[in-house]
Image (cartoon, rainbow, N blue to C red; front, side, top):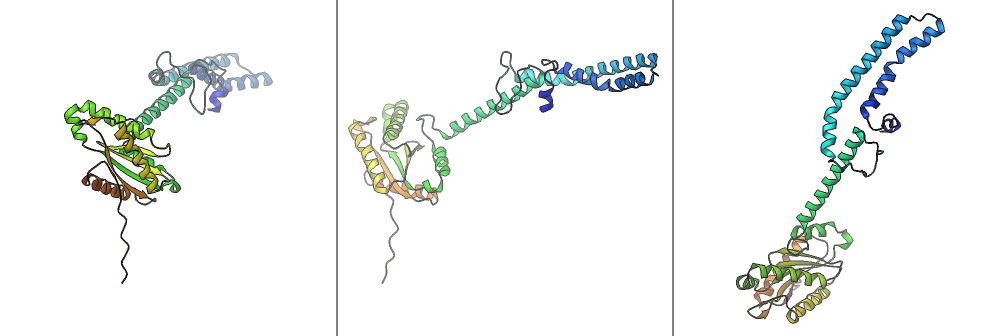
Length: 291
């Protein structure tokens, strides 16, 4: 790289001629040596000098033709990486001068292709971790965000929420109306939780919330406020009744997260069995009896 930059002043827009110049100079070193020797000794033979000069020039021309043939595939690659009118000016990190030769074009093309690849990977990661309908995290994204938390932040409560009688919404109003209800409910959750909390569409009409650094009472109160607003300002109706939700809640203190989610899911099941539109907490292990 340093040698390339140091020689960029020689035919800056043509690597082919830059290589020819270097080849010409280096291949003529023996000839220059012969001239110096002949001048200092007075024994120069002009016939040999002319023959040697012509042979050296022919060798340099042959080298140029060979170099040109070897560079043809690189030119084709550079043209493929750099569409017309898009030479690419920034490469991130190391940069090359705007000289326009094949190495510069290839360098910028590869850097541009790498940047485009990184952008596509980022977009795929977002798509893989985000629910397309609601715009919040999906199950995979929810678990990934929990896994990315430092150990000190893996404390709080996990809630699993299920919209009550949601099948009736789809059956009576259609799936488009059901999708709107899901999107509006996700917006409702986002607006009524803290920025440090993590919300996700767990699947179907189920949602998940991680209340970071919250006690069970605090998380339960938050869910109760959301439930009360759902009754007053419903995101939709089924059988002329506001759509409500049931929720199961479990404290998480940094252990296996799926175990906590499983307990929250069991609490949700009890809430559904007990009449819906309520919040149930995970059952605590019973204290051992002492006789």
